[in-house]
Each structure stands twice: as C-alpha cells, then as structure tokens.
Amino acid sequence: MLADYEQVLIAAVICWLLFVTIDVLFRLPEKGGVSGASAIGKKIEADGGDLHGGYMMGNIVSSPDASAGTLLAACGVYVAGLPGGLAAAVLVYIGNRICHDPGYAGTTGAVLASLMVAGLAGIGFAPENFIAGMVIAILTIQGLSHRYASRLLGSLWGWRS
Amino acid sequence: MAELIALYICGVIALFAALRCLIEKDTYLKLPYLNVMNFAVAGIIVLVLNHPLSLLAAVAYFVGSTLEANAIASAKAGGVQND
Image (cartoon, rainbow over all chains, first blue to last red; front, side, top):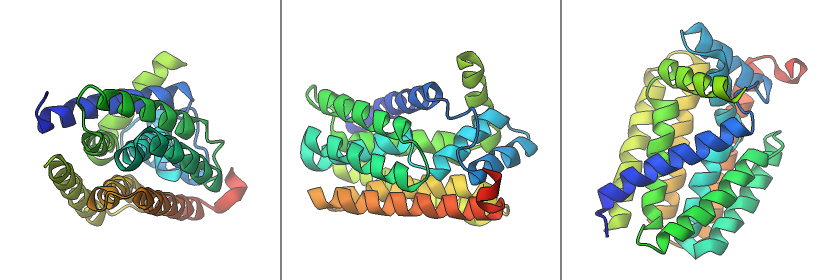
C-alpha cells in the first residue's frame, strides 16, 4: 500500500499520459474547434509557443475534452463507483454537445478513465487521489508555461501527423 | 485523510491558477489559467461533499464554466462567421 502523496504523483503521471494520448489521437491539435480556440492557439504562437500545441490548449479551454472526462470520471468513481464514472461519461457527452464539439475525445476519455480508476481502486489506489492527480496534470499543461507546454504538445502532434 | 490531502492539493492549485489569471493581462491567455481553476473547483465540489448528486453539481459547474470560456474567446475572436 503506497502512501497518499506517492499515489497522487503516480495518478498524475497516469492521468497525464491518458488524456494527452487520447487528445492527440482524436486530432485536437489539428485545428481550433471553434473560433475562440483558434484565436487562443494563434495568440500562444505569437507569444513564442507552437501553433498546434496552442490549438490543443484552446480546444481544452473551449470544450470538455479527455482531460475533463478523466477528472469527472474520477469524481464519478469517487462518489458512486464504476457506475458513477460511466454516468460522468454520459454527462461529459452532453457537455460536449452543448459546447459545439462532436464529443468523441471527452466521452472516450471518461469511459477509459472510469475503467482505469475503478480497476486501480481494486489494488489499493484511492479514487480521490486521481482527482488530485488530474488537477496536477492539467496544471502542468495549462497553468505553468504556455510557451513550453505548447511546444511539447506540438512535438507530440508532429509524431502523430 | 486521503480526502484531505486531495482537497488541499486542489485548493492550493485553484488559488495559484486564480492568481495567475489575475496577473495575466491578455484575455486569451487568461483563459487556460481559468480552465485550471475550474478543474480544481470541480474536484473540490466532489471532495467536500461525497454524495452522488455532487457529481451532477461538479459537471454542471464545469460544463457551464467551459461554455462561458468558449463564449468569451469566440465572441472576442469575432463570433461564428470565422468557424
């Protein structure tokens, strides 16, 4: 049984890998889904960042994507187990449709994250540590340095395309 | 105990993101910081009250705030004609 702070750090790494992989696979860095997301991408590029990384950050701002799906699925598993996580996936899909987004990335992220969090809860990981882990993971992308985060996402998108 | 650690982490990150959002001058660049704060607050809503209905509250808060960020950015960028 790992200590809580170790669980939070491991959860942050797993959540980061999960949501970045799903977002890049669903082509979020390709273009802005709405005009606001494109504008955020172009502004980040003008500040010395990467355009495609900026588009992905703009899309994360503008619609619940795999990162929001992962957070809300962890919340769902925390309050009601695996059914709660799957309920969160349905709610994320509705949220995506409200935000002018097809909803594939957010829903896929929420379903995979519920299975992951519920599965790891079986071997001793507490679901609340995944909530904290996902908040740390989104902080590293959106909240520390837009320039370097967008360059990292841009280089991942370079491998994908 | 684990809830408290997760709650403190979310609280500190929410405050940090809110401060960076206040310090940042450009509206477009404020929004990613605001997004981090929304993630942290949605987590806090569920961690404070462990009840199935808290999930609905967290999703309603998160989707609503995301839609607002979307609306602010898109309205500033010139609206739907650019899509």
